[in-house]
Amino acid sequence: MSYEIRCFSIPKIGELERNIQDRFENSPDGSLVALADGASASLYPQKWAEILVKSFCQSVVENPIESIQRSYEEWLQPSQEKWRQYYLTKLQSPNRKWWQGGSEIKNRGSATFLGLQLQNLKHFAKSQWQAVAVGDTCLFKLEQETGNLLTFPLTAAQEFKGTTFCFESLPEYSSFPPQFTAGWYEHGDIFLLATDALSQWLLADYEAQREDWKKMFQLQQQYDFECFINQLRQQKLIKNDDTTLVLITVTSDQ
Amino acid sequence: MAYTQEISRATPGYLVILIDQSFSMCYPFGSAGTKSKECAKAVNRVLRETVLACTDGEEIKNSCDISVLGYGKLKDAAVNAFSGALAAKPVVTIQELTENCLRVESIKRKVSDGAGGLVEIDDQFPIWIEPAAVGETPMTEAFEMAHQLVQDWIETHPSSFPPVVINITDGEADSLPTTRKAAEALAGLETDDGKTLLLNAHISGNAVQEVVLPAAPTQLPKGDSYAQFLFETSSELPPNMLERAAASGLNPTPYAKGFVYNAKLETLIQLLEIGTKAEFRG
Image (cartoon, rainbow over all chains, first blue to last red):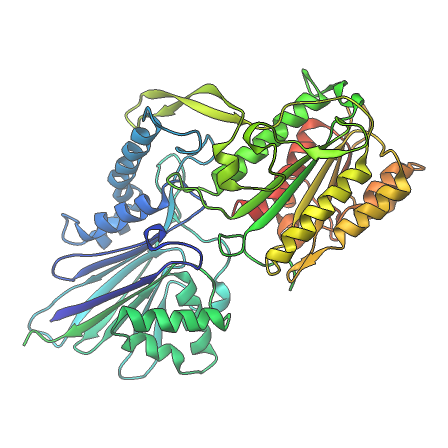
């Protein structure tokens, strides 16, 4: 099987595209994808989100999810070291302005994280997928047979709060233990990854038995995505936040 | 539901700090300072933390406007307490505040290098407000000046989180009836998200009982009409400030007011944190 991956992103109202705190990455063959949402109140959240997704998708071990399951703290260490060196370089820069480099209290980055691994069993109709997540960046999968929507790790719109669990960019601060799930996928399946504002709206729409959420699975162009999100924002149906959507469509190799 | 609007570039907030600069502020306060020095230090610290909250380390985001007014330094008037490049700007953006401090003081700090060693860096503390303790207590004029600024600000930010006004004083206002009227008019100004929040911090260097975030007049010192006045003119804390107060260990009850009386230095700092952290710092 092969994977068609599309990523759409729009900054929160009032911010520029370069300020988007969400970061997405996928491995060259598409079997590993990751989405992270940097906490804007933390230090260098963009950099931390970028380090996390790259670490997952450029993993030298065959199954990064198994590594995380064995010890998420050990898995985080190389990423935390990269962030620390970035931080120290900034702190020791001779041109550093007083407001750059955080403070004694604001001294680390935080980010939610969602990683998806698709195992590709070439001679089987169905293959296994695994996911790992911390925080409110969510995975959705529409079950073709039942029409049900699988959601992970949050399963209800009311679970979304102002603050959420994160991976921290320094080992001196406890990262929240991630959650894991797994399932089977086949040709024609679509995985949807979304950061919190869109995830919350999607779940609320699904819970209310409306149909607009299904449109997310059909999006093809960034322009259509922006129009849709801007409309939701105008109707005050979605939080004003950086919003990122990733669609992974499983296609046949033929 | 009121007091739910987020603070961001799209819907910035507004913080107004009023500082009593009357003569009695030169009296001792805290472990080694005077009320005016410790008050200036606390305000500079809160301004620093607010700026840092509006940056991710790379860029400043103008998600908050700020005013700091002093009263008592200039006879019967309230004035912009900023000096230097900000002296002519009673309302400043975070960007302007960041770029125009009077000076930066440095303190060395050690951070881990991740390999068991420590790296020494300079922690930098900008100074905007200098201590002052000169004249009387024209609190009415301070509230009136704040009223004008808040009213003008709301006209251009009708949907924003309501302005937060924090008044720091150590003594009695020159005229309670006029000050009450001015305070009530100020707290009556509102955006679509609710009324302006007025928090009062009365500080004292004496060994007297503190009153912290009272919810009822019965919690005030008996017969103290000034405490009664400040209690009545203080706003009830909205849910996010109550949460912040609880998180800092103050155990507020429902309907608690943003008011501390005979406050020690630590309590003053806590009230400043409550008034700013929930809204302006994420």
